[in-house]
Length: 505
Image (cartoon, rainbow, N blue to C red; front, side):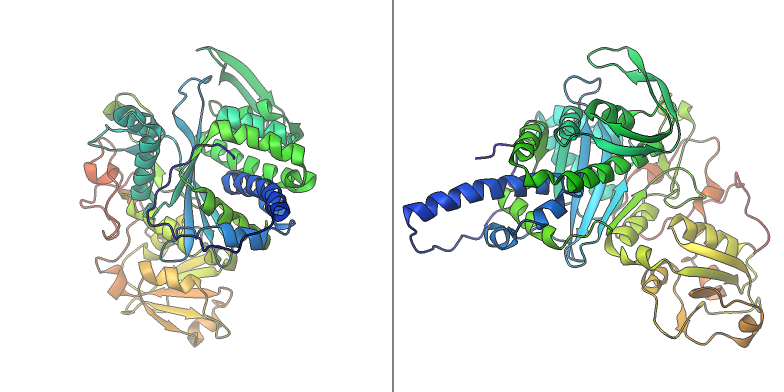
């Protein structure tokens, strides 16, 4: 039997139906097959979201029927999605062994098999009256110490990520760096294209408090486990967000290597991978759920993966965070959500619950039909942060438009509309006004004409980066994860903006 740490989290598991007795030969044969099948399913299920791609190898073996019969239904949310929290820690030989320096939320749509992964920066600051305020990467460490239990610490981390992201997390998987390194070696290394030369003279040296230099020139490389780990961890001379991007790049590379070498078709490689993961992985997924996850593999397509980051560049997709003055946080470098966690909740809703919108990639134009200066530009910045492609913005045909209107082409209603209506309510039309046709406003899939019923209402979304406090500590409202039912946060008092909005539209 495969031994690795799991924790059952549900009661009343359905009993399996009794079957007719089989011959001794049949039983022996099936036990042998099931041992291999179970091994493959476990490896697949554990690594599916850490190292996506082994899936296809399982799918190429005809175990789907067995897995469906033996498996147990995965937990799902209201959208039919199963959500995972993936954590990477240093392990006993590394400084800060229980700090979760890799934090990824992954979600699989059980129907379309679209997979979305969002990386959370380790420096995100969270308030917690029970175990103490800290960066998010310290929560597991603090909770493990507080409850004197690793599994309770992981469950606490799961709860905290649910508050931050605004979605339910069904399973957690923790892998330490030793397991990561050995896993890469077990599949024969990975191929990586390094976009920019990395030179890090401050890479932590194993088993010491000293540093060593890690460098890797730009270009194509074949990395062993040790080098891949350094490539994934290095951050002193780049950024936490660059590191998150590299970690997702490595996930993809491991997937590609698993497919090329057909890892799960080799008994020796299966054994090597199993030996690696069973000693270095902790999860709350049950064996039966692992089997069900393996059954999904047969229909998986590697082009259905969406990678996203949450970071502190407000001009880019996912830029919802900012850096407050260190003097108010005991000299620590931390990140806070601009405008509260509600923007991150919406970002999660968009990427996890409506991943098809990213595939749709609708082009958007925004026109300001009101006397509120800068409304089109401000709305453009908000939508860009949600990864929408805003190709044009400016003034509408009039400044006396009352009702916000969405114009889109008649052939099909873009799914993007479902999300836009959540944040900017308005009526819809497939008939573009003649004035816009004559002025060339026909390039977009969606044209938004802002009306005063939105811009002058409490539903209007102000860009929180215009109102960041320049010289005062953050308030609890800015650092505590709010309840999911709260409405979009907007500044309560408009201070002089640090980057004033343009007076043009």
